[in-house]
Image (cartoon, rainbow, N blue to C red):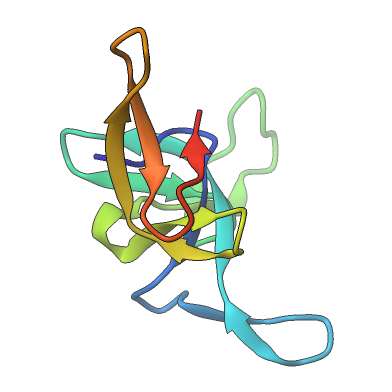
Length: 113
């Protein structure tokens, strides 16, 4: 899996593929990856795939009620955002001088560190 926690991604499939900006134009949805689940190949993206959870009252939340929170989506439905060209990109792997793996954008050659 080429997506890591903290990356900015673009949703390329699913119900949250597009959103409206302040002017009312339809634009692709972007968000920050909050958590990665490599065993199930899912990612948790900020503001994407919002679900309503009904929660019982607890000591922390005295009232309980409906809580909106993000649910994981499949990693195949998101692509890494290339900050150089501000477009989604495929990711390749290259090695630096110490032998460490570096993720590299296929579009612009930008190195994700």
